[in-house]
Every structure is written in C-alpha cells, then in structure tokens.
Image (cartoon, rainbow, N blue to C red; front, side, top):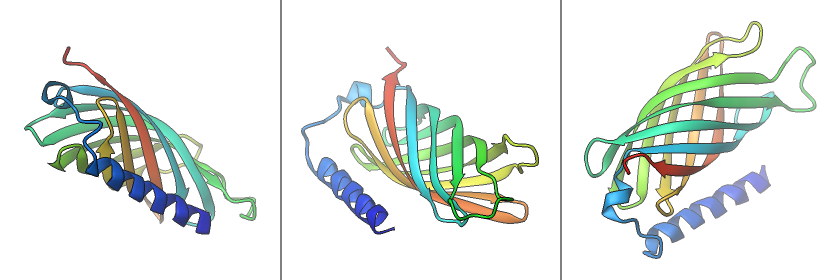
Length: 174
C-alpha cells in the first residue's frame, strides 16, 4: 500500500505541475471540439478480496458550453482477486456503461462525475450501479489524465477502486 500512496502522490504532483505551466496550451478551437477518446484504466481495489484493477474504455465528449461538457463511455474492467482469497471468490469482470459531466474551472483542469451501470460478464455476476467522481487534466490537445474513485454498488455488496485513466483523444469536429 505504501507504493500505491507514493504513486498517487506523484500523480497529483505531476497534475499540479502540468496545470501550472502553459507549455501545453490548447488552441481554443481544438480544446472545445467534440472528441472521441480511448483510455487505459489502472487501479487498486479498495475492497477485499480484490486487489488490482485494470481495463479500458472508449469515450465520446461533447461540449455544452466553454467549460462544461457531457461524456458517454463504455469499457471493460477486471477486478483481480488477491492470492490469499478463498477459492470461492472469483475475479469480477464488468462492462461499465456511464454518462457524466466534466467541468473545467480553469483551462485544462477539470472535475468529472459519472454514473451508470456495470454489466457483469460472468455467470451469476450482478449488475452494479456505478458512480465515479474524479479530477483530471488535459495535458495537450490529445492526452488526458484523470485520477478517480469508482464505486460499484451491487445487490448484497459494494466494491470500489482508486484509479488513473490515461487516454488519447481525437477531435471529431474537423
């Protein structure tokens, strides 16, 4: 867990450094376009007996105003089980389908919130209600980094993760 804490501290410091520099400024035309993104999600489960979480997603982002955009995403997430877990516990494979909003209080820095459903892929897997608040930064016109908490509320239990989403975006407005 100490390694994870250092990783998170470094990620937050990196986001702060990038937000405070103007080296990667976006042009106003490109930064507020309709965008399509492909992301890699890496995280640690905060619920036992799960350990590492990985997955990916695709996302469509449409600006409503100069600093508010709507997002729609679909992906795949795998919660792996720690080695010492009982044999009856299996990894949780899920397809999250979410909608949300991104609010940019300053250029490139944003707060996000998403809600949706997680469709379990395994026999007997339960559909989950997903909620995911986050904070992120658009590093340049293409790269997006987001640190978030993501909770999966299933009937009878809850699991969650703290993750980093690294995404590459494409402008669809050109």
